[in-house]
Length: 224
Image (cartoon, rainbow, N blue to C red; front, side, top):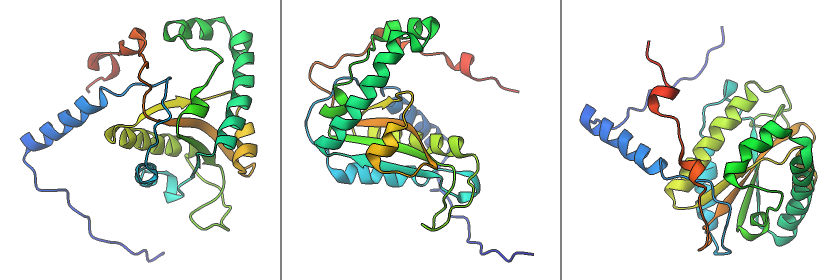
């Protein structure tokens, strides 16, 4: 039998139930103010904030501790321009009918379109890749497990960290996105899942009223 190394559980702070409830509610109140931003300013964001958010993402639970993710952080104007050009080409095809009428109708209240100027304006683009193969060691190309679920969890922690730091974000998912492998110089066995745009909101940024229409707790949860 494999003799695995184990470490003692590191306990959480010794809090009362009232303190735990207060912490949970405070975090919920903060996260309730998170919104997708579609108008960014050119104001810089310190790299240290992005690094801290990525480190948090890297702590996410994942299948067999294979950590099947790679985050390509883009700040150069040339790379951002290349991403925008390729993304808008796919978006034009999407909005010209590739998406289908039902999908396009669902987007009408959000006011989205094919133009994505924020891909160049925002100081940071974080391109998220899911690794079908590849472990913690660079020469390890064994199969990974629960890849999409693991990367999704990591991205949730990434977005939450950026929000807590006061950084506006947008999740952009052009389809198809294989051009991101070329721009970011990533291997074919990595699948691009999303682009997380990060920066400060522009002074004229707005939020679609439709975005505030959230399901209630009773609608999203059941108790057995």
